[in-house]
Image (cartoon, rainbow, N blue to C red; front, side):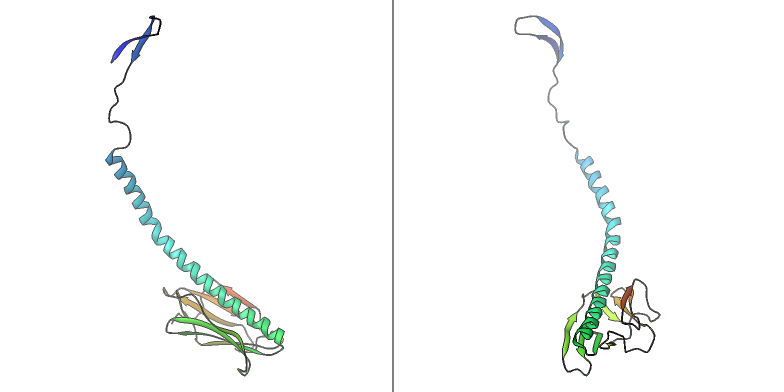
Length: 178
């Protein structure tokens, strides 16, 4: 609608355009459906990568937890001035870590279950023994290595060097997951 605009005192200033209000404001259903489709495609591409990352993170956390339990048992051996035997085993898909003094007379660390996504240990049950000096006394004179496996058969390894130091690595051992 075109017309002349007037001020209150009756003077014509110029031409004013009055637009009627129409239903053209907002988004159409097609535009919303396209946006939802783009989000769905992006999500479909991202979810598998996220699930894989999450599984690796859980395996890394479980491996780190086992290594921490071994280090704690080593420190307990030195503090108590007694040897400590640590057992890591997988029974029915559940990995547990426990530690007792050499000879089994006292519990050093109660049996602790690791995350449920971790289901196996290569060579289970694995026993690592520490002397009262914190030195590894089991598994020969070399480095003792074993793997921690998850449900997808991914594996991280834990090494206990002869001096008793514990390390975990994001690499697998030569022994495949059970």
